[in-house]
Image (cartoon, rainbow, N blue to C red):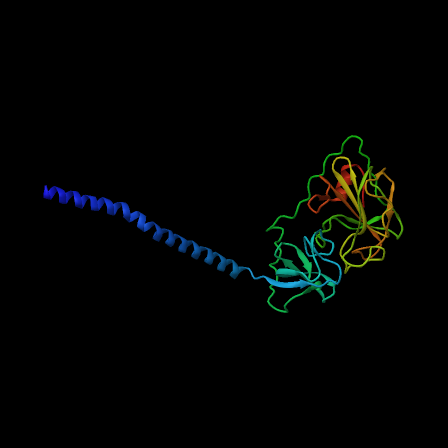
Length: 305
């Protein structure tokens, strides 16, 4: 009996020990896991910090916001803005079109942390510590950006040229990859007409500084006075750099050939001309849905340029 009792006591103690040991070890295991997790996160943060250096600066524009562009060009699509005096986070700089701003005259553009670009001519920032952006990939390394497919002509469509003029700059050329239309040279005050029947959806003054009622220049950014017309089949046409406010209003129906405005040189422009864009699967008209106006007109049986 004594021996049996001892056996029971020993067995009970062993069972109790086996039950208590995992519970007692759990906090220690959890703490170990937490320590490993913290170390992993800290290591990842250190790795990111080592790879990416962000330099802060501030916009200095006077009274107007600083435009953020999709690419380093005053004519590139505007994707946002920075208010005067607000902070910008600069990843690197790239050399592109020269701009004269409120801080300096420079051809440098700041590539921001949100992926956009702003002209360094309007940024107060440290004089050192900003790296140059990595060179753009060659066509062999990265295929050229493709415009969307042009929809087939539908029954009843009828198109004409917005102006009788020669083309001086094409769609997304090597020199101007963000140029989403064609430039048609014409004398000041030449009438601009609707390319097809539709409805006016935008009448806008778009300029980085000053007024659209005066001649622009290449140090500015923006389309100046412009109008957009929505056509059947999700097509939108845009008419830029007018000499004064367009002769139409938003919501107004227009016929093919109806007067929209007059040729000027407002906004980012070096001389009188019409900057003309065609967008598909729109509105809105964006960089992503712009197509070559020459190819679009060819698909409609009309020669442009």
